[in-house]
Image (cartoon, rainbow, N blue to C red; front, side, top):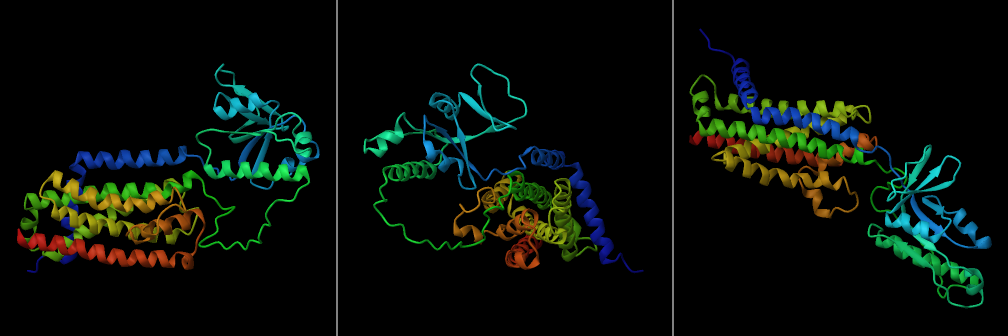
Length: 392
């Protein structure tokens, strides 16, 4: 009479793993609560992007030069205040500027607790320009005037410098004097992908970070499961049965990838990611991420001698993989070496597919890099686990 087949043996080990995971209250609760929390946080994040810079303007009479501000370039929103004091209070944070549907600017005193105006949009004024009285006359006659540039501690330095240069240009224009330099012609070359006019919201930027958190939690769960089995020598008991080491490795592979990919798919579906881009690309990236983290989970679970050791090794190996996910929050600011982090290809493919509607040709390079890392890390995980099982 022949014994059970290989599929039945793998299924029995897999069933044992699922029962053991369901009895681990810590990771079971963390998985459920974390998934709900991630979905909730995603929908609470803002889904709009403001690509304009709002500056305040206070003046007595700029005459025809007021049109310079009225016809501001796209991306520059100019708000004219009735007085410099009102503009100063808004920039300092003691008041708020609101624009009604008719274009009227309303000032809300937050210190006095005034109610928010209805049918109005709140304006975020980064910098203010306060022109003094008789600015036109004094500048035209060569008399030095003082224009106040009002900023707060949140105003970027490049915006402050740009406003100072802008005032100097206006002064030269009013005096009828050409600028002391000749501006060279500029040939703009954008290195990389031009995202001008295609900025993504904070909600979309958080997608790879949330996926990383889900994969990270399941890595901890898999590493803990393997660590317990090695400590209690459950691995030895399993391989003493008709089950072979290859059956054990197959069961751990299915369990790790299935657990991680399952929760990642639930998250992606809940946040509407599949409807935002190519679903097959997103699933492929999620699968590669699940396989990558499963390989890491098998390796660190085999290396840890106890709960604390397993936890330490898991954190040391997993946390660096969060760097590409953080880089998605601040595009253009990450150093070049981030591309060599194993999770970079997965995170890049997820962002490009969900936020920019990328196709297969667009994500071929990052997915190809991810495949290479998956092969390396998965082979490492299987090798460490099999070697540990043989030495027990």
